[in-house]
Amino acid sequence: MQAPTTTATIKLADNSTRVLRFSNGALKKVKAEFGVSILRDPLKTIMEKLDEDAIPRLLVLGLDHKWDGGFPGITVDQIDELVETTAALRPLLEAFGASFPEPEKNGGKPETPANPQT
Image 1 (tube, rainbow, N blue to C red):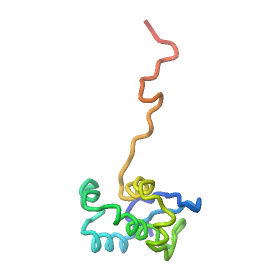
Image 2: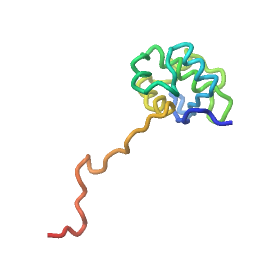
Image 3: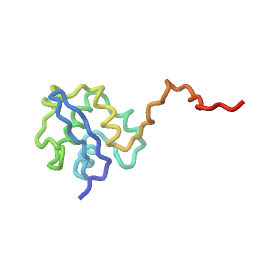
Image 4: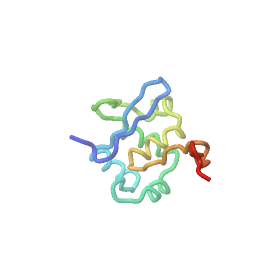
């Protein structure tokens, strides 16, 4: 059985890498607790309704699974110790379906062809 959201990895302070996975049950809890639908609401709407107090609870809902990379039974208190909130935003957004552009090469400057034609 696959989760309805994209999986994303997150590195914890203990140097373990875990997998965020939001099952249907987790998505229902997000909707009940925060009033947002991860599958229906635009990402901007979701982020406008959530704040830094919501992030640890969202991480618990995404990490508390028995599948590969899960952390069954993890608590908000453990998240507070193991996760830097700002570092958790990108994997959390990726799990919700956000995509990010690849870093630009050359600091965003156009690449010069090896044999420029004049």
